[in-house]
Structures are given as C-alpha cells and as structure tokens.
Length: 220
Image (cartoon, rainbow, N blue to C red; front, side, top):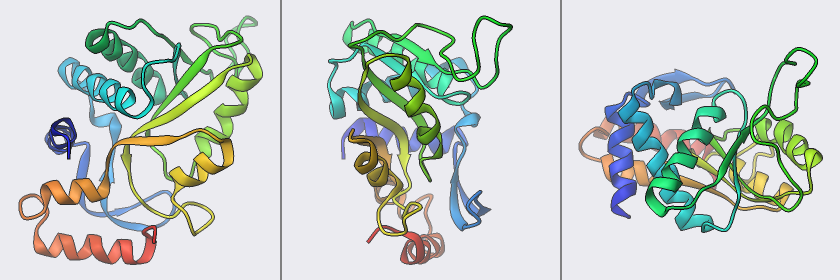
C-alpha cells in the first residue's frame, strides 16, 4: 500500500470522517462503518484532502485533462480543493466546474453549470466523496455531456465501499464504469482500510462485524 493511502486512512479516522459502530444507511443496510465527508471542516483538513485527491487522480488517470467537475452540493468543494491540489503538487492549472440544483434568477437555469463553462474538447475528471448507488452520476453525466462535447476521463471517489450496487452482482463503481465507459477509482478501498487498521482501531469484534457485512453485501 502506498504511504499516502495509509496516511489518508489515518486522516479519515482522525478527522472523524470514517466511523465504526452501528449505522443505518440510506439504502436501509445496517453497516458497521460510515463515512461522512461533511466532517472535513478546517482549512488544514480540506488542504490535505485536496492533495490526496490530486495524488490519486495523478496515479489513476494521469494529468491530461482540463476540468475537475464536482456534482452539487458535496462535490463542489471537492472540485475546488482538487484543482488547488493539482496545482500545488504538479504545477498544472485546471479549471473547476459544478452544476446547479436550483435556478439563479433568469441567468443560470437549474442543471446548468455555475462556474467555469465547459467547452467542446474538454477532458473532465469527476470527483465525489463516495459512490454507493451511482445516482448522482445518473443525474450529472447527462448535464455535462449535454452542455458541450466533452470526454470524461474518469471518476475519483475517496472511499470504495466495495459493496454490490443496484444490480446486486457488481460494485457500484464497476456498474458506473460499465454503463458510462469511463474508469472509476478511489483514493482507498475498505479492504485497504481494514488492512491498515486491523488490530488497532479495528478490534477483533469489529473485524467480525465487518466480515459479516461483506459476506452479505460485499462484491464477490
């Protein structure tokens, strides 16, 4: 495991973003772990998060792209800090872009972009916190491809939960990649989280609960 991945796992726990216990997800599943990217609240935390996204994107997709797109609302700050991280680490300037969920006066309709305009030929990297069902991509992918003739280079999420998606056979990330034809990657996966924290944060009892959860919902 790369050192930045191990550091990112420790960072998620330290920031209170990744928690262990008993949680009921929106899907109704009872999960022994939960990730809430809204817990990144300080300048230093956001800076570190942006650098992690930038490095993961560099490793997974390279730097041959023009725009970082973050779906409203949580994806907006992710796009901003990722663009900043790419500039800081690699000296490459990319634009950031997001969509609007509501209309703004009569100038920007709902669904349109409210930041840097997309242009024909743009290569776009999308960023999200975590992808469980792929619903947000279903909403935003038609928006960005409808605004201009762009190519989506890939989607980067912070944590791959490694659970079956809506189809019940493949992970949500694999379902998205298969449906839309672009790769989906993550900064870290739950298997890497377990590897890094087993015996410390993850106790034997918690490890048993995680194993039982993946026996039921994990990708086989």
